[in-house]
Every structure is written in structure tokens, then in C-alpha cells.
Image (tube, rainbow, N blue to C red):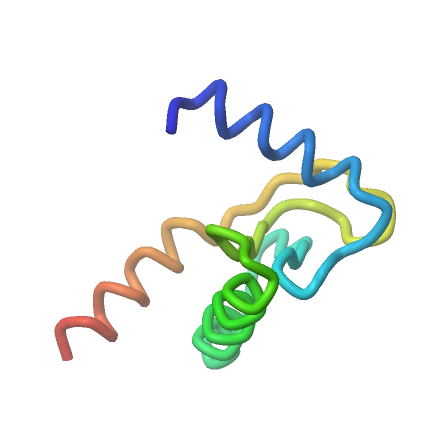
Length: 88
């Protein structure tokens, strides 16, 4: 998927009337509880499967109610945390 494909997909998802069982928006401007991330991955992927969707989406940096893009600074922290969990 190209950068433009991702931008287009994000715009489509932001235009939905509400979050779904397989789409979750999180503002997470600077932090996110990493203990919850596995639960989100599991729930979103299971629901996507039940709804016959190819993917579930956990999208950071988007306000839930307004769908405004506010950005996030957690990606680097998240990448480090995930790698640490994989290689413990």
C-alpha cells in the first residue's frame, strides 16, 4: 500500500458516521497504555474477521468524536515497545 493509498483510506475511514467493531480512533497525542494494545489488536482483528473485513484498524492521532487529525508522538515509543515484547 502506497503513502497515497493510506491517505485515501484514512479519509474514507474518517468519513464513516461512527467507529465500528473493526475501526478504533485514538487521540493518543503523547501517550497510550501499552498494556491495552494487545487487547485492541485482538478485538479489532477478531471483529474484522467476523465482519468479513480484511483488516481491523487502530488509528492514532485522530480525535474520536470530530475525526480531526491531531497527530501523535507515540509511534517511536510504540515501535520500541513492540520490538521489546517480541524479543524478550
